[in-house]
Amino acid sequence: MGSDTDHLLNFLRDHDAPCPLCGYNLRNLIVPTCPECHHGLKLTVGIDGVRIGWYIAALSPFLFSGMAALALGSLLVVAELAGGRPPPILHLLTLVGLCSGSVAAALIWRRRRFLRFEPATQRRWAIIAWVTHLLPFLGIIILMLATI
Image (tube, rainbow, N blue to C red):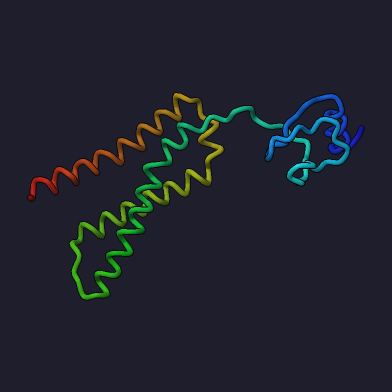
């Protein structure tokens, strides 16, 4: 039984295959390196067309809230160092946003688990993510408009 490199080169002797990075046709390759981009090649089994749309849809509100919380938290620190007294609700919003950001980190860390879910389950989680972020956001907007 030959090595993985032998299997790769034997396959490429008779087949057209693009380099995964630059797309160069690797047919008749004699060394396991792309002659175009010079990256090493290895024999692997891959998934054809991983669908990540629902993953990105679920991740987006958590990432946005986490980044917004970092920005708001930075402004709160500057305001307090300057002697200001920001409203406590802003501290609460920062804390909630940081929690949301940590959920984003967990989703990134466990992305393979999410991607193994059926598309209907992925869609459900994405909808839950958006609803749990949009409803409080809309509530805050309505409260702000009511105080004007």
